[in-house]
Amino acid sequence: MAQEHDLNLKGTGGNRSADEIRQDIAAKRESIADAVGKLGEKIQGTLDWRGYVVRHPYASVGVAAGAGMIIGSLIRRRQRPMERIMDALSDAADDLAGDVQKSLRRIVARAGAPVVMKRAVGGIVSRAVSSFIQSRFTDGHR
Image 1 (cartoon, rainbow, N blue to C red):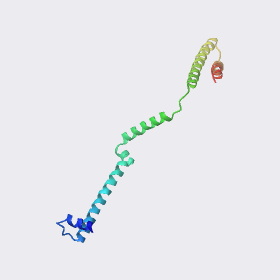
Image 2: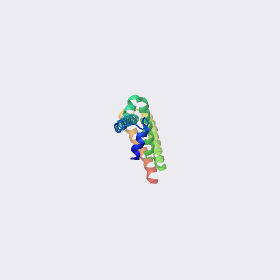
Image 3: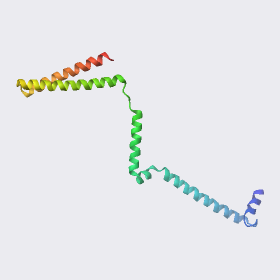
Image 4: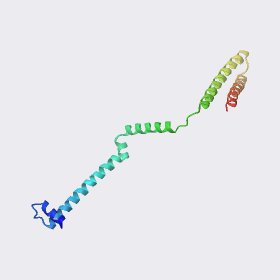
């Protein structure tokens, strides 16, 4: 009863009827519903990533690439020091084998051997040197 009395006093000097109060409440309810609906649409538009990608394609690609790089660097398996050393030695062995193969080609070329023989000897020797160096360093360090 006290609430009814308070509602009657807020209008036009307390002379409002129950129907006028109900209409006022219905109008306020519609106004609030419209405001909540607009707010919901605005929030949905802000959180909609597809719309952002359509509006800003280059920025979206940049953000995706940056996120991929960060995530990739975080989950990338890091090599142990011994693995890095073995990789370096393997590269050095391959370089040495290539140098030996070039030297053998020059030697065989001076001797006048056929091309097939040159390549066969060079390949065999370079593989042998490479395998020897790799096995020498990898067997002793495991």
